[in-house]
Image 1 (tube, one colour):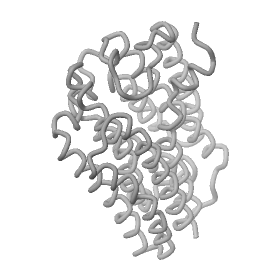
Image 2: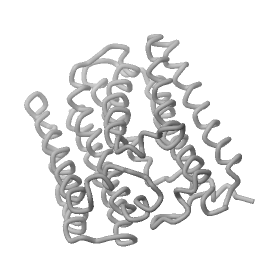
Image 3: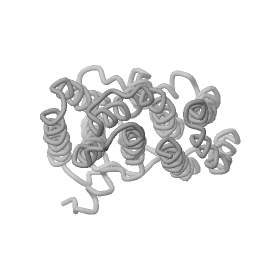
Length: 288
């Protein structure tokens, strides 16, 4: 029987920066122009974390029952590794999505009803990543959806929830945040190219091939920081984000050197660190 610790690992804590960073940046944008609604900001954080965890469990469940995660390089999954039953993992995903819906509905009641639709789309996207008859994660569309939901939707939505108004700067701030989230998914998929090919998972990395995927990862990582720095045109202190550049050296070097398999797991952690530090520096720069 799976333990609490097993499910904690199954929530994939290393992916959670993708949920936290856009909320931090969105709140900073709101604080720059308006008084922040603290309760709504905290609820936005709950939504982001819950939908990310729910997506991770849904991915574990769907890949497990389809048998596409039976052979993998990364950490063993709950269902594929027979650590937990498919039913238990599915319930964990549904509970996480319920928390997402409850927190999102509360925000919508306190701000605008249109956020209900946004929340529903987030949950649907989380489930259909590897679930349903035609999971978009198997069609090379995972990175696009991550950019949309963990970049544009998360930052703009958080800013709106925290300030109760649309602030144009949130759109520009959302772009580098979304690109950094894409880098997390890309390095994960580059690591799993060979096993994904065997299981029929046509991720973007599988479609593009190893070499081009690595070049794309580096290009997106560098572009994310450069675009964030461009915000200095309206907020000179946004240049603080450039302080994260030294953290990029190791993951870029390892990816371009052709590290494979287990050697790319530390690169995932380093990429997450870049995302966290860049996000915090950008948030501070915008807030100042």
